[in-house]
Image 1 (cartoon, rainbow, N blue to C red):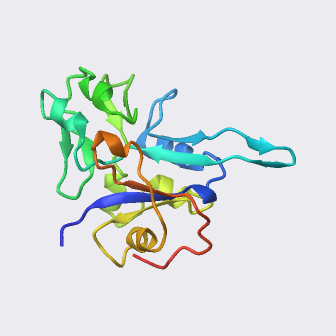
Image 2: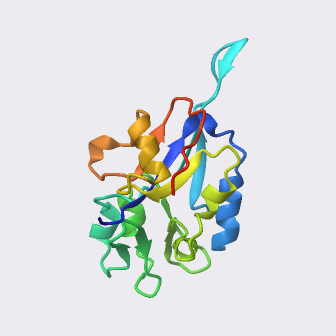
Length: 191
């Protein structure tokens, strides 16, 4: 079975503590003023005293059909066999085509290198058997990562158990971040 890495994000568990963003910046030496991941807010909804706010974490969607890869003139933007979309620094010329092509605004121009930069699912950590930094540090266990093709992975078990949604389904990129909006009381013990 082919590995296909991705994320499940449980929005009801996110409290907008920003630990995921801080961990990512530190782990990946992201320059100040930039971020490889984010948390967006729905804004306060409802009327006092019944108000709520929903937070939606995100990062590169590691798409099945990544437009950033097809527009790259040098082959620096690549989709690996495990589904992780990367930028090979040595090949990147800083043209920013991939930044423009990404419908999720998941890339930025690194001010220190002049190259495209983005979430790599902490590939260097995965290769050591560790979780991505954003997943490891998530206090509410809102962010989870794993092999979407492995039925015993925590992400696959959650997708099988709860309704999910993806962002911008209509653009046909096949994003590999699945959002669960309902409450998830217990995270399954997957690998």
